[in-house]
Image: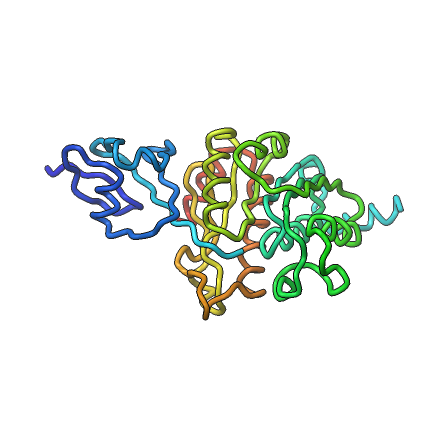
Length: 68
Length: 216
């Protein structure tokens, strides 16, 4: 069975050394202002290139848009 | 005045009155979202609102914000306090004419049960959400994202991420053609206010997650 993670409820294939930046690329997300949680834990922007996402992780990427 | 206060609450279910009168809700920003959330929560009769904003009222704000012509130029929080007292003088209002940042959020809002994110700029939304999750992970934060333009009511939704809730369509960007307008800003602000009530009145955590899960 393939190893997977959930990104905003979409199943995607897990790979070795999977970072947040790689996930953003795979998902084709180009948004700038994001709040990201992995298994409920907040990931700060300076960790996007270094934080390794483990298999079966539940990743939530929330896109914040100006207007109010 | 005492009779007026009793009459003010006479349409509420008596069971909910002690809960809403004991609640303290934070509102971060007093523009399109914040002024509308504040007016709705004042009408509901929430016991105390804590509202912070650094801005002054400009004529262009009147297209969606709960202010009046004669208030142009006043700090928003000062004008909002006047308006809230006209609607419901029986609740407490604490206002802060200040620009919120990572360093003052926790002291201003430490006593709230729930905070409502009501900023205009995406970077401020992100700053508040990240600060809140770090400082008060156990307290709900209700944010808004994607509410510009008009129509497309059916795209507006609420999503739950642990104690972070997002109201809006999560897609509509501001640009020269798409600006925030009263109907959609009002809808999203009132969704935020409605969720405040829902969280206050369904205080069992498992009921909250069960109910909210059905929204996703």
